[in-house]
Length: 223
Image (tube, rainbow, N blue to C red; front, side):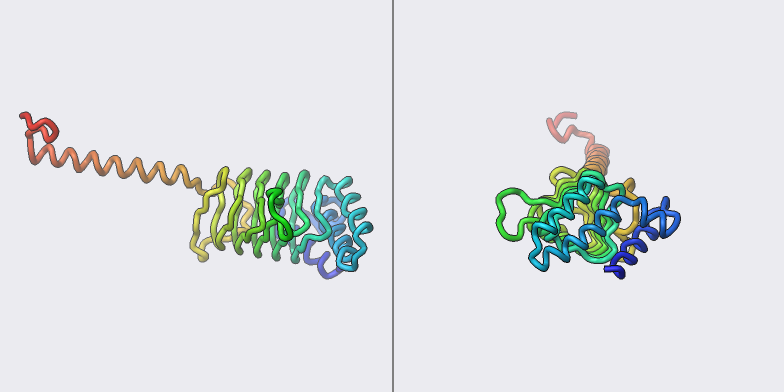
C-alpha cells in the first residue's frame, strides 16, 4: 500500500506543474486523498468487509467530492486532477498511469448486469466533464476530450471527441495521452468540413477548365 502511495504521488508530481514537493501533494491534493482512501476500502472489499469498505469510500466522498466504489480495480499512478464530481463505478477498471479530470463519470447505462462499467487501458486521459458509460474497453494511450460522451469501445492510440464521441486515430510515434494538452485535440467535424471545402474548390476548378475548353454552355448546349 505504501509503495502504491509513492507511485501515486510520483505520478502527480510528474504531471502537475503546480505540484511543488512531496509533502504538499500528500497533504493538500484531494485526488490523492480519494485514491489513498480507495486503496484502503478496496483492501476491505476484497476481504468481504463490504460495509466497512463503503463507510471508508463514502467518508472520502464527503471530504473530497470524489466517489470511487471500493469494488473498482485501479492500477498504479492514477492522477485525479482537481477531482470534484468524479464518479467511478463498482465494476470499472483503470490501468496504470491514467489521468482523470474533474466531473468525469466512469459509469453504467442502467441496462447492463454484472460488468456494467468501462475498462480503461494504460496511459488514458479523460478530460473534464467527460462521461464514459458502459462495459466496454478504452484502449491504451487514449485521450477523451472534455465533455465527450463515450458509449462504445475506443481503440488504442486515438482520441474520442464529441456527443456521442467520434474516434480519431493517431500514429503511436507522435502521440502521448499523458500530455496535459486538452486544447489541441482535433475536431472530426471540422476536419470533415475542411475536406469538403477543399473538394468543392477542386470541382469548381475542374468546371472552369471544362468551360474554357468548351465555350458552349455545358448545361444548356447554348453558346
